[in-house]
Length: 253
Image (cartoon, rainbow, N blue to C red):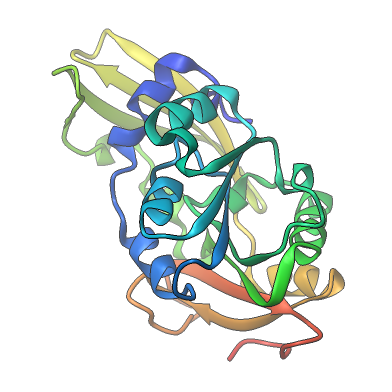
């Protein structure tokens, strides 16, 4: 797993670097009304899980990285049921109206078997009528072409008053896999933290194929956080809503 999620000094800047909420707002619009039961899979430091709990949802926050989950527990206390691990660590007797995976966490699954296992475990824990909501970047948009030092944004303020500037540099792009280095400049260019990541950029058709092989069907696919339908040629995102194949349909609507 990426160093960002395990190193305490990098976890400390995670919330500052992930304060956009267009994905949260979109997924929130897809949920049944509280007190529906929701699993936040790969919940990170718990921001979305805690918000959902405060809105009245029954929330289970699931995170394999212990430092991230420790920060989530501090922020959210017992408002959320926290689970260290993966969806497979949640009892199969649990049933969720929605399982959500945000932050492009799906792209950390680098092998077909990883994706198939996820879909199998999710399918066993969806309540009747429940949905699995997640996103991956559209490979046709080639987001990694913009991950370069000259594309670095302005520094961002941290709670302790320091500034952090994030610099990306792609090291390797082979097939579906892109490996890149993230550098975090804290206060000045000589004070840096580093995190190396590999992400998988899967075409929508391949995701759908693997989902169908594990008993899930596509209810809808969007291409933007404003709800535009997915266009494989230029949509920046591939945002899925999957349901049990016994309840749903095949293909992209």
